[in-house]
Image 1 (cartoon, rainbow, N blue to C red):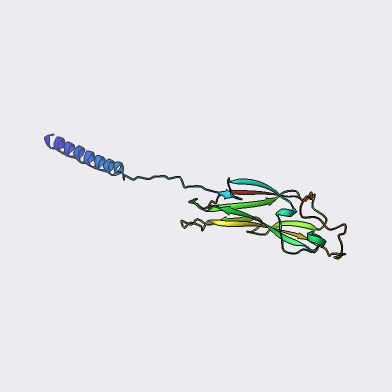
Image 2 (tube, rainbow, N blue to C red; image 1 turned 180 degrees about the horizontal axis):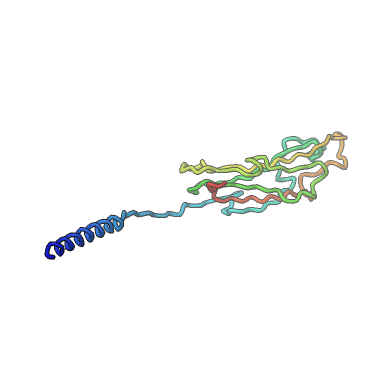
Length: 181
């Protein structure tokens, strides 16, 4: 009986050793530290600090590249651009710009406005730590199809660049570009 007792005690000690050794393996842990830092965000759209801006441009805001109207007026056949500067210097992330043109129902027949920078009105300003590298222009091209009927005098299609009811509404939004974009 004494031999069985010793054998039982040895078996219990072996079982306890195996059990606690295994337990110790599972209790071992690694220490890790992590930190989260918010990235800086700085957006100036059209020279004012904002992330969304609404604009309404008239004929005087357009940089006309052709003038087919009489005495500095605009007319069918003219085209030009609107440029909106965006400065994201100081941001520590990629910036996604989205430009949308609102209702152009009041434009003369044949006049269109289209966002020509980026793809479908969307462009990215990639992150750069170098000052002056996170800047972009949103460009809107205005085209008035047609031809001038009379270049010698002002006619019914000619439109003054100032004081007209021409308006092109534009909404420009900037946000952080995500991996899913």
